[in-house]
Image (cartoon, rainbow, N blue to C red; front, side, top):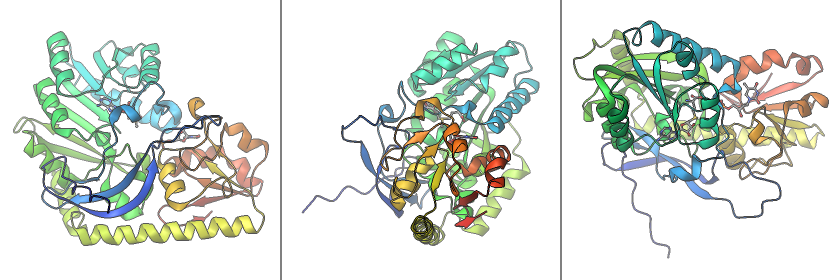
Length: 411
Ligand code: SAM
Ligand code: TMP
């Protein structure tokens, strides 16, 4: 008999994590594969659980960080016009507020290709991006952004303080939820932050994931699924305070959290409002999360049945957006090239590769426009407005979109 794996422990408080959703064996979501590559793919068990002590929802198995974030990490922040605008506005807000003093300093964790810091650099404000993935860090440097090729953790923070002093703002978008070693991160944040500085981060919101059944937010890189209540608890345990929350429409629904040292900033009313609404929704309750898991299994069955029926009727189906999220959809649902002919994507490093696990070919968007399919399966549903606006010709040619968030439907 195989030995039982040890019960997972919460990466915030150390207590037991109770699993409520199991996606089985999955590949790395951004490990796009060369068609000639015959080596074995890295796999792990993707499952999610709740720590009933501190309320943090998290993966039960951790993938080593170097397996995900390395020289060839393909994701680019600049891939969406909407996100470029989102980050420009964030930078401008920082410049007008926290960074308006003399010799202000901002550190961005996971600055990627420099989309946000570029605006700060252009304003001549002192900044540093910390980015372990080599190729995207080089793109940031090419934008005039100062970048340190490194994983942020406590040791990195100590080093930065010694070389450059403390920061007015530490910012992280779609990065903090990727990092299981949270104690080291938050010790680093308290080391690096000025006494009245702020730590601002934005990540997919558990409340939106549960409400929209957006189960594809769950993949190797997304380790934590934050809520105001779990972040409030996490901050408190690390000598910080949650002082503001802001609900954002991007990436399928996110919260921007602001943390500060206790008493340094006035806590906004929005924090208590969100905490109350989460209590009402039962976001920290196992029964609510188990009901979410049941809806996930139902969406999987319905989506696969629809794709099979359309293929049996002779329709061509093409995927739109080779998102990291789509790795969970294709591998959990068992969707391969027999159902989805190819996936189109604007990211150069993904094109002419195969999607992880499911091995669906990735093509540039031109392949989509050259020969429209009858149906496009919208994997990049979080960019739906932007994509549908630019793909009107597909709709006018009779093409239909298949969507699976918040439920399976054709538009
Ligand atoms: N901030 C960008 C955005 O929102 O578009 C990029 C988000 S991308 C999904 C996550 C980024 O976090 C990757 O570029 C990855 O290399 C970086 N990352 C992962 N672990 C990190 C760590 N410990 N410190 C700093 N960056 C990290
Ligand atoms: P994301 O959901 O993690 O931001 O990934 C979006 C993916 O979709 C990324 O690989 C880029 C791709 N994409 C397109 O191919 N066309 C588009 O118009 C947009 C907005 C994204």
